[in-house]
Length: 597
Image 1 (cartoon, rainbow, N blue to C red):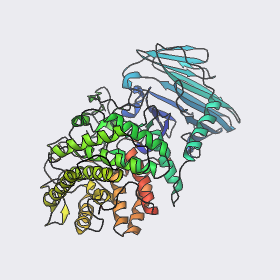
Image 2 (image 1 turned 180 degrees about the horizontal axis):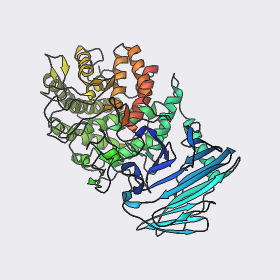
Image 3 (image 1 turned 90 degrees about the vertical axis):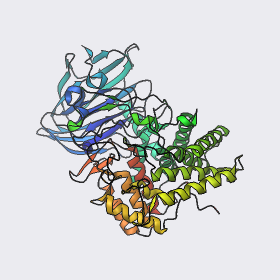
Image 4 (image 1 turned 135 degrees about the vertical axis):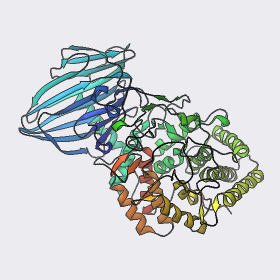
C-alpha cells in the first residue's frame, strides 16, 4: 500500500527532488530535472512503476529526522540483532545528479536488504541492466543510471537486489548517478565526502536567515524546503515537487505542479526578502522578468523551470494514480487560461522587488508599462480566476482587485522613481476599477464581497483584499467578508478555497476539495490584522501541527480523513507559513504599501 503523503521526506539537489518514505523507499524521482519523466513512479502506481528500497530485513523505524538544518535525512532502525542508521541525501548538483545512501552500523549485527527497480518514462520503460563488479548500469533511450556500492548486487532487467549485514562502525555506501545515455561513464562519488559537502552547503545557506521570532526552527525549515524547490540554473521556484497527488482521495482533481506560477511571485519575494535571502529573491525576480518578455497579451499563468511556455497536458493512463486517483497528468493546460490576476501579481511583484532595494532595470519598467497597457484594455473581461476553474469564465472579484493592484503599483513606482508614465490616466483607471468592484462585487444585503459578480458564494482569496491596499483591514466591508468566509468556507478550523456548490458548476469539475493550507494562513493573517491576535496565533499553531515529522506541508488538508492531500511539498504552503510567522512576530509585511495620499 502506498504510504500517506505525510510519510514522505524530501531529498533534493536544486535541480530535481526525490520523495523518501518512512520505511526507506524512494517512490518518486524525476531526472534530470524536476519536470522530467520519473524513473521512480511508485508514488502514483505501485512498486512496479519504479522505486529504490533500502531497509532492515526484520526491523522497524524508531526515528527519522533531517540532520540539523540540512536536507540530509537520517532514519534509525531497531532490529532483533541491533540498530542501524540510514543516511539519505542528494548533493547539490555538480556534473551529474546523484542520490547517496549510507548504511551505518550502530550496535549489534543487522541484516539489510536493497531493492532497485528502475522504470524510465513515468514507470513505462524497463531499461537494459548490466551487473558487473561493484556497479550496475541501466540504460534506456536517452537515460542512464549507474549504481555503485561495495555490496554484491544481483538481478536482471526488472530488478536489482542485495542482502548484507552491518555491524558497529560499518559504513556501507550506495550511490545512484544519472547521465544521458550517450555520455561517458560518470566519475565515482565518494559518499562521505559528498555528505560533508552537502551538510556544509545547507548549514552555510541557512546561516543567512534573519528571522527573529518565536518560531525560528519552524521558519528555517520552511526556508530550506523553499530553497529545495528552486531550480538553481535559472532561479525559478516551482509550486511543488510532484504531479497528480489528489485534492480528493480517489478523485480526478489531480494536477501537475512542477512548474513556476507567476502569482506566487509576490508572496515568495516577501518570504525571501523578509528573512534576508536577497540573492534568491533577485534570482527569482530575474527569472520573472525573462519569463514575461514578449507580447503582454500572451502572458501565461505558469512557465517551465527555464521560462519555457510549452507545457501541454497529457494523461499517463498506464499509471493507476495515488490511491486510485486518476487521471495522472503530466503538463498543465491551465497555462493557457486567461487569468486576469496574473497581470496584477507580476506588477505587484516587480514593485515589491524595486522598493525592497533589488537592482532596477529599464527593461523591467518597459515591460511593466506594456503589462499596464494590456491591463487597461482588458481588466473588464471575465477570466478563469486564480483557482484555475475549468468552467465558464466569470468576473472574479479577486481578479479585479489584482487588476486594481497592478495599476496602483505602477502609479506608485512611476511617482516614487520619477519614471515616464501617464499618471493622470492611470489614476482614473485605478478609480474606475475600484468603483466597479465595490459596486458589482459587494453584496450589500449579506455584507460581503462575493466570489464573482452576482455570485452566491465567497472566496478565500477575498481575505487578501486589505493586503493589497484596496481597503483597510478595519473597513466594515472587509470585516463582513471575513465573517462570511469563516461562516461558509471554514471547516474544522481550516479554510477551503471556495464552495463549488454555492453557484452551479463554477469550476467545471467533479468531486470536492480539501482545506487549502495557504488560505488558512491567510485567515490567520486577517485575524491578526483585525485585532484577533490570540485566535490568529492559535490557528497558526494548529496549522503547524499539520506538518509531518520533518516539517513538510502539502497543498491541502482533508479534515475528514485527517490527512495531507495534494502535491507535496507545496511551496505556497511553506511561503504562507513563513509570512504568517513574520506577521505574528510583528515584522512588517514586505512590499505592502501605505495608502497613497
